Length: 134
Image (cartoon, rainbow, N blue to C red; front, top):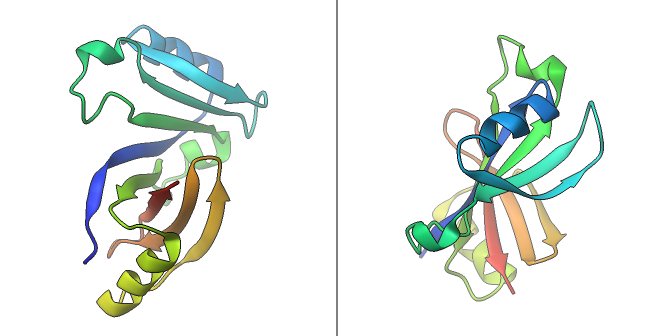
């Protein structure tokens, strides 16, 4: 049965990475990692005081993608994707559950540092990343 364990992260698109990170830092988020500069830069942020946060959400991240062209396009969702950490033992088990539920895999599986993920789309086309951690 397809069942998420917890919310993992959300990905958003911004037009200016430095400006976005200053904004989120001023609202209690810390930069965990960053790569690249300017166009196509990436950063991951989360609550700066994770001990104060709800234990379920303390490690949830927001992935920030810099793409000025997409950030202002009228026909593009600024939310790049939402990630759910799934309650499956392996990525193969998750793939079987998705097949049995009639849910098509849009891409993946892809190897990540903390496990494997596949992407599906919700009824409105939003990318949903389903992660199975090691």
